[in-house]
Image 1: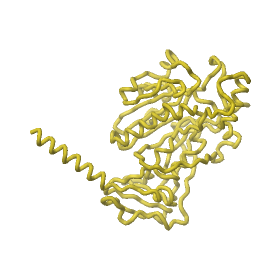
Image 2 (image 1 turned 120 degrees about the horizontal axis):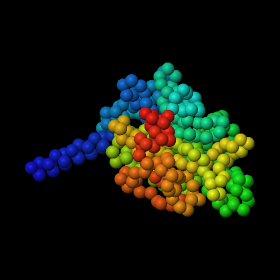
Image 3 (image 1 turned 60 degrees about the vertical axis):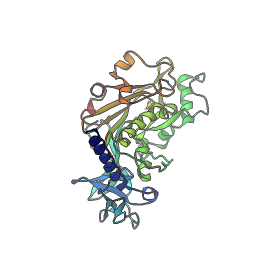
Image 4 (image 1 turned 90 degrees about the vertical axis):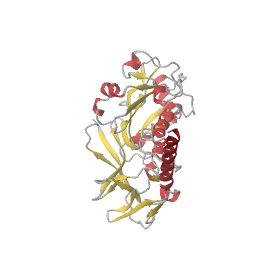
Length: 363
């Protein structure tokens, strides 16, 4: 009996391996140089292709515009016919447009490709408070991405905020703001230091295609985030999401990332707004990530966005926003340091009901 079980397990492994080897991997040219947009079709609508690996027998649509859509099928490691990447002189360009969305009390913007009379291929959406220069949350669908495509450096305002508002995210401006708010004797921020990043709510690395990655470099997707936190525990959380997909725990995940609260410094008396008259562009106190699957699986991660902190937040500061669950139970290991961003794992249903009731059933 044991031999039969071993044989069945071996055959299953070989079957899965064979299927994986039959998948079609898009090459660097297809990911970076084409002016076409790639999509799949779920039987009722087109969906943007977000990953660089296409399963065997899956169909991919190469879109130039509504009258130029070419279908290819992944068959045993190659596309038939070959995936169309050229011959598109009037390609559809990415756009940002405001839409109605009851989950957002401000303006919901969706970023993607508007293929006229066919579909809007959404990359992500962002709930944005334009008047206060504040991204509240973003939503996107995460798929496995194995691409090494570089992200563009350029950031765009899309005429949603001014150039002056955009410059308030830069470290020299933030340093001057620290001095103004906390006096020139402040010791939090040293002149010339790169203390802050323009932190992405929807991360670029979760998209395989160069142009899609570039669309995350928009101020509607950015927050003032401490660089050591962005590259510390927050990066660990983002990698945890990718690992759930790459290890096959989930096929696709909905990810909602956002902020609430305003960071207070100098014994909690000074709220950190990077623009004044009136106060705008707040440095968020908390950054959260809600990860969910259609099966009902839910996870919530909460990070204290204060690299100046020397002790872990405790008591009502945490309990008022998060019913803690052990992060190790989720397979997440984070550093217990302020510079890395003190991080908590929370009961998802309690967290949403308590802090974000408008996202109930959404995230």
